[in-house]
Structures are given as structure tokens and as C-alpha cells.
Length: 178
Image (tube, rainbow, N blue to C red; front, side):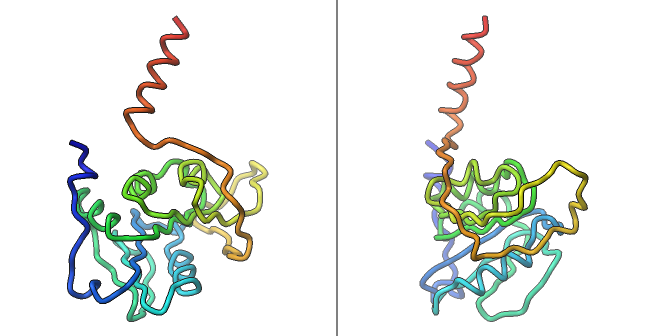
């Protein structure tokens, strides 16, 4: 049986009082933009929403609806995602983050930006914030620009995240090259 199907959504008296759970997780560094994730949550949350942040934060903002849950093992992360409705990943130049694949597999709506490849795996229902196009000049990765949340675009990428399907596609591709 699929591990994601086996994992139960996290239960906790503190978060049980909230209607909608948002989450984000990372090995936090400046280009992962934890501050922007928090700002997005604060600007878009409902009256009875909370944000759970997994990982060791590189930025902290004190708010009664934001909880820092620390570093979690894989099964506990899946449990967190299974409880969440939204997963925020506004990283700058993060090309294929596993946390997004896992959150999407757990049914989360993904919120991401166009920088990097996250948009390509986020799903058709993703909320995508458009960033300036990269001109391929060197950048200061740990100095990402702020986001303009009004620049939302429709995600045009349709992608599969199921490893069984992806593996079959690789095998089919390799077989064609013989």
C-alpha cells in the first residue's frame, strides 16, 4: 500500500480549533523565502486559519496563528500535509522541491512562484506568482527580490507526480532509444 494513503492527518488540540490549515516546510535558507511565505499567509488567510512551519526557520514572525513545529521526520511531514489545505512554497530558483511533490500528493493546493521549476510540478490548480524573467546573468541567490502577490497567473503546466507513472515513462523512453 502507498505510504501516503496509510498516513493519517495530524491531530493536535492546538490546531484542531482552526478551520483551515496552511503549511510550509524546507531546509530554510534565504532563497526559500520563509518571510514571503509568512507574508502571503498573513495577506490571504481566512478568519480561522493557521500556518504550520516545518524545519529550522531562518526567519521568525510572532503571530498567534503561526506555529513553528520544528524538524519533522518524513511520516510526520506527510501527516502535516494530509491535514493542510494549502502548501506555500515561494522559493526563488528551487527546481524540483520534494516537499512540493509530497504536499501535492497529499492533496494540498500549492502556492509557488515562476522562478525555478516548482510551477511545473505544482498542478493546474496551483496559485502561481509571476516573477521577472531571469536573464541568465549571475544572481545573489541569498538575496531574492520581494514578490508582488497581485501578479497571479494561471498555471499552464499539467504534470504527473506519481513515481510509478514517471518510472514507466522513463522505461518507455529508454526502450525507444535502443
